Length: 254
Length: 198
Image 1 (cartoon, rainbow over the protein chains, first blue to last red):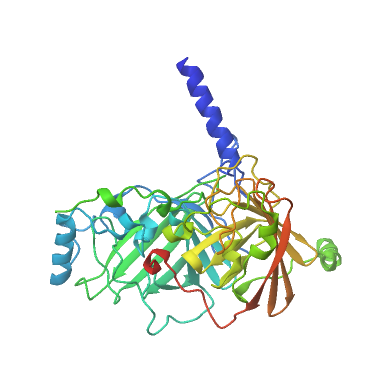
Image 2 (image 1 turned 90 degrees about the vertical axis):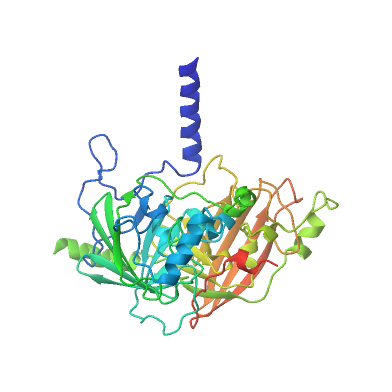
């Protein structure tokens, strides 16, 4: 009976998956003998010889989503005094005021740490990231424009990108100080300059080196590396936080 | 060499898809009411509060109807529409995949597109029945099928012919046309609905 149930559950999963393109073969995928995507095949390249970083990616693990300064010792960012006080307050409040609790967006650089798939697409003049989480997008302009001088602060900031060898380098400014960089509540300010270096190691793996330089909140920059892996033969789902947010009213702090 | 000759001789016969890419601004706020109201099967049904008040995604074709700008990006296998409203997007697959057979109902549905002469024809199904079709509150069921024909009339103008087919809600399908104008001088700005909720 149990195995029958499992089989039914399995079949149901398959049917659902097919219905939503979750099991739809991705074009131009290198495959092993078993037909599955060969994640260790060489990274593909675009016609102009640059690495092709497009595809659906999923962050590996939660550690930076919880604490973006987790690699530092003693596990803390180099805070300016006011930022240390704000961080302490947020920790003591058990993250009650995390914008995510209200379905506000994750900003830069938290967005690349959210353990939800995102899709990178390349178009003339821009790299586009579609996030399954919140069904939101981010544009990274590659048409040679400079960063704006005095951008209106936003959750995602204003991003431009360029190639440096095999690295796609993204510079972002204009990030709103409403953004929390992680669920622990590391603040970021409008003075921040975030640099992301995307490098596709092979077909199935990417390194994103993220440097946070925010002299208003921190005494020195630091760098983390996300290691997302490729999700083959699938597509993004729709995710609407406001549809069923049952958390907000239950979240209490001190 | 032979390959090059074959390629060159074939090249003129390859019909390029029209280029719809760019930032477009709807010319005014459209309503379906005049076309839809006489066709309603249950005209007296209560419509309840606007689902948009919760900042859930407003749905299709309501996102097309304005007034906020949208941006079209094109690749060979997929057209992406970025909407300033909600900073949300739709993926329209043009790689020949069929529409899903029994999709999980969603706010923006599942879209496939094909090029017919100079128009991109987008078919969308798999909607929940929570969204309104327009600001006037025109209802629909999960049987809704929306066909959008995007045609760039000239460099500056995009026409979107929108056909609503929902046999559980309307006596027969109907069509309206939304017009949009190229806005080359602007980029989309971030718009987070919750920050504008009154």
